Length: 334
Image 1: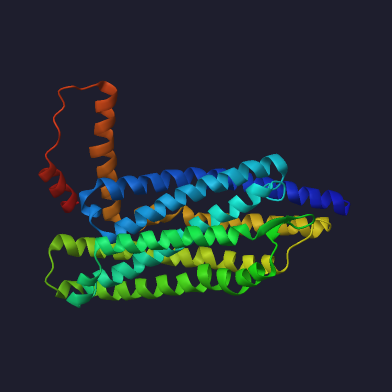
Image 2: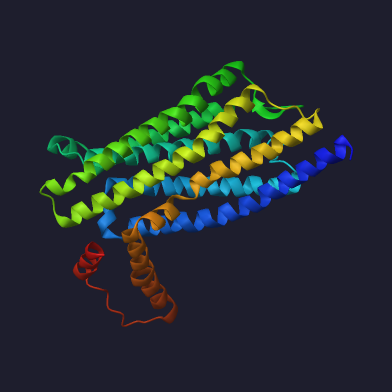
């Protein structure tokens, strides 16, 4: 088999792999993140909870990222690559939107871990320091930062004849190599999320000693366990991609070397599929490791969504709205 035909075969396999994994992750990602939004916005138990607020923002960011990745998947199936090396505007917009969503998602995980540490702390002043209003301000400020950062960083990408869509400014390459990938989306969120989730888990183990309502204690234990498992999976999925991106930014593979380019495309497809899983798995982690969350999902789907669907489809004009007090009591007791 000639080198040319071998490289073509590898490229074809990488394209097929990206297409199938992209469709699978998109399907599971949309379903999981939509269900997350339903649970954390429909249950009154979560409406005033700061961690639920951050998870809601993360789910919205994940949904946007999922539609970006499925667009790249469709373009890969058409052009045999993601078309960023063919269209100038798409080259920049793909990285602007991708980096904005990635930074938002990663740091919403950090916000969740930090907030849970303060919420479960034995010191009253620390618990009272973090409020939902303050959390909304911090989230809004950080989202603005992520958007501005994405625009500035994505604008540095340009199309090179043999390399495709890569940073065209030397300072941008240095920034990506020494700050963005290793620190901003690498070790900094990993250290923040892992440290504070472990501290929150330590706090919640001693929560029984504090005089708190049983509903609050159950909710703190539930969310702390969910956040801890989310952070563990997050660390495992992000580190390989960050390492790979640092390498590719410094040593991009030229299309003039078909075999090396084909192998790099295959490695990129595999590592990217692992990384994209980070934007898919939050709901499935919660539902696997939290029996209470499974009951809450069932409550939302059966008691809320199903009842509304029956009302809309069957046009039951004499429908009586459920008692809010009994609904709240049901949520607290599950």
